[in-house]
Image (tube, rainbow, N blue to C red; front, top):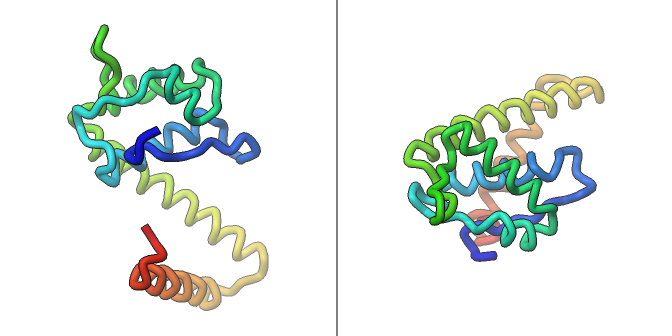
Length: 138
């Protein structure tokens, strides 16, 4: 698979393969790695690339087309829809908010106080900034 769409599916993950593929595509579109009008790999090719059943990729394509993220052009393939970047950025923000809420809930259950939770975010941000400056982050 080309560098624009480079991800793997973890069969042991909490999320289904179709959810992982959809999330990876939304992230690629939200980040600009895939632009409106850009052609996606065929169902068969992506299935081979990420080691899933072609029916799984077909389901993702149909779901994302229904959501307005992708558009099929009969005889030509599947393409990123014109309005996809805004839709994908909004979806990524929602997903990240949910993951953050879950992390905070777990931290509270583990006994961390609000100031300790805030300190974890400060430290994580500092680590990410340091990694970005040293070239260790994409």
